[in-house]
Length: 275
Image (cartoon, rainbow, N blue to C red; front, side, top):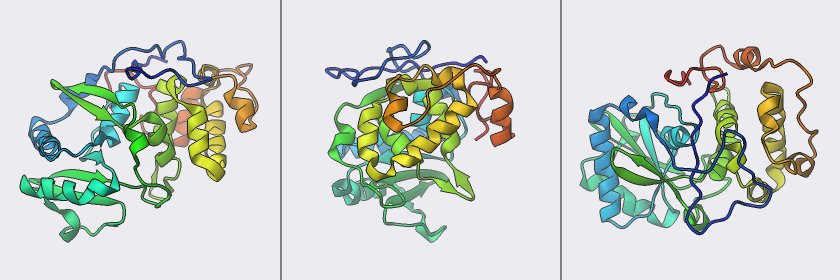
């Protein structure tokens, strides 16, 4: 199962959380973004313009979505937009900054829920400003910005959404027409040894059963890789420790969940993921 793992940088001054140990393929290092060439130049010019105007307006932001996913997994998939996370107090300021550079509200073309996101567009390119979860479970807060990791892309260093917050948000996305749990399995597979699991559990509160369920499926999918997660995680969640006594069936089990090429453990590193 060839995979191009992303090496994760520990933020300056930060310590690995209690119970975290980078796995065999999860050594601390610098982000390496291999799939820059997958971003069309025309789209990146507009993304960069939006980012530049946010900076000029002194609006702290975090890069999320497909770009952050690629940073943690080292794998690219085609995306139709860029997600920029801001605190709620900065959302109107961010909207004005995008408007000043020619981006328009997407609502007139396709209505969307304005309670958590502002969707803007220019020349067919979409820039999303996000300040809360879609289900209103939580809003972006200052702790998300405490120790940002950074992604170097085309000469620019961009702060990215913490992996714990990515997991937290994606656990709730189980819609009939969209499920983000395949993203979660890839994130845990590539960078699970660097997650502050204790902090994530505290954030989840009464919603911890979602994490239990996701990791239970992950153990079924690839038990050998699940062994690389901290030993204390399993009793902490009331889950049995992973076992590799059975033959490795991850290649078949991944296709049982989705027939497309989605799982980084099975797909060659030079291939884009299909979902």
